[in-house]
Length: 593
Image 1 (cartoon, one colour):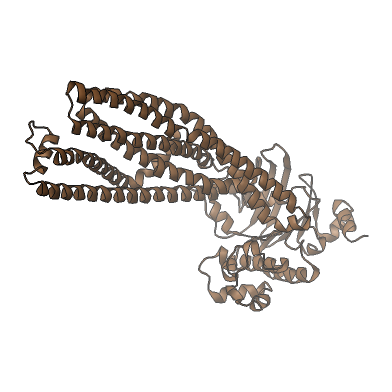
Image 2 (spheres, rainbow, N blue to C red; image 1 turned 90 degrees about the vertical axis):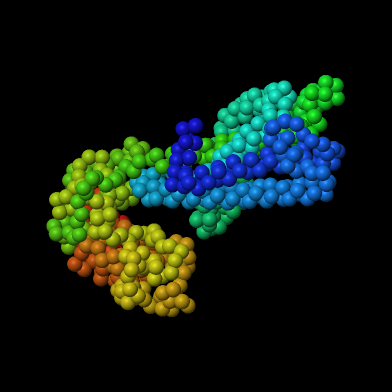
C-alpha cells in the first residue's frame, strides 16, 4: 500500500483535474441511476394510468410524467430519457478525457523523473545494471503505472460511486430484498483480497521476464556486427525465443489468475439474483407487498451492481500490476548517487598550477583493489603519458580525475582544491576527453561536434573540424555538416569518428585534455591524421594521455608506468629506455627489439 501511495503522490500537481474527474463520476453515477428510474413511469404508462399515493421521489416522478393523454405521457417520457442519456454521455466523455489527461501527465512526470535521476547517478550504477533492464523500467513498467491510474484508480472511483448509487436504489426499493442481494459483496471482497497478493507476485515476475527480453534485444542489436562475424545468429535467436517463452509463461500464469475474479464475482451475483427472483416473486404474487414496477427497478439495479463489482475486480488487477511496477521504478529513484556535489561547492574556471594525486587507493564494490598508494603531479601545460600492461589501473586513475568515482582513500586536487569540494559540473567543464570507443549520437555532424557547447556557430564548428582534420571528409558527404552519422556513428569509419570526437573536444576549449587510447584502433593513415589533430589540440594545454602504442608518447613531458595498481616508473622516454625496467620491456616487445 505504501508503494501505491507513492505512485499516487504524482497526482499532486494535477489534483484539481482528478477532482473534476471524480465530480464527473458522481454525475455519471447519478444519471445512470436516473436512467433506471425511467422503468417505473414507462411500465405504468403501458399497463396502467392511475393517480399515485405517497410523497417519495418515484411517486412524484410518476405523477410528473403520467398524463391523462397517453401520447402526452409518451412525449414527456421520451424527452426526459433523451435529457438523462445526453448528460450520461456528456459526463462519460468528460470523465474519460480528464482521466486520460491526468494519467498522461503522471506518466510523463514519472518518465522525466526517472530519466533525470539516471543522469544524477554515478557511473558505477550503469556498470551494474543492464541497459535492457533500465529501458524496460522506463518504458514497460511506466506503462503499468499508467494502467494503474486509468484502468485501476479511475475505474475504482467511478465504479465504486456507481456501486453506491445502485446499492442505494436497491435498498430504497426493498430493504428486505437488499439484504439478500448484498450478501454477495463479502464473498466478492474476500475474493479480491485473496487474489491481490498473488497477482502482485506474478506481475513482478512478468516485468522481470520482459526486462530479459529487452536486454537480449538491445545487446544483440548493439553488437550485431560481432554476432554476424561469429555466425552466432542461431544462438541469439534461441536465447531470444527462450526469453519470450519465459515471458509468455509468466504472462499466462498472471492472466489465468487475473481473469478468475470477474466470472467468480458474476457467479456469486447470479446466485444472489436467483434468490431475489424467488423472494421478490413471492412478495408480488403471494403477499402483494411489492409493486411490479418497484421490483423491476430493484432487479435492474441489482443486475447493474454486477458490472461495478466485475470492474472493481479488473481494477484490482491493474492496481496490483502498478504496485509491482512501482516497486521496480522506486528501486531506481531510491538509489543514491555515490558521487555527488557538496553544499556550497567550489567553482574553478581555469587551471593555474595543475593536478595533484596524493596517496590514492581505490577499490570497486567487488572488493578488488585497483590503485595502491598512487601519487602523481601533473603541472599546468604538461603532457603526461600513462602506460603499462592492460588492467594495471590507468583508465581507473583517469576516471578518478574525472570524478566518475571517488578514491577509497587519499585525494586528488586541482590547484590545491580537493575534487570532492568542487562542483561536479565545474570540474568536468575544465576537461575534454577523447576515448578509444568514440560515442557519437544519431544526429547530424554539426550537432555531434557542438554537443559539448550548445549555441556554437557554424563558423566555429567548421574551424574546429579543420583543426581536427575532419573538414575534408565532412564536405565529401552528401549533406556535409547536416549528414546524420547513425547510431554511435555507425556510418563513419573509426578514424572519422575519432576526428569528430577531437573536433568536439577542441570546440569545448578545455584547459585539461584526456586521451584514453584515442588512436589504438586506427590504421596507420587514420592514426597519422588523428595524431596530427591531437598534437594541435594539446598545444598550451594540460594533457593526460593513456596509450598502448608507445610511439605516440615519446614527446610526453613525463611518462608514468602503472603496473598492478602502482606507479613503478616515471621519466622521459630516453630516461626510461636507459633504465631498462618495465617501460623498456614494453618498448622492446612492441618494436620487436
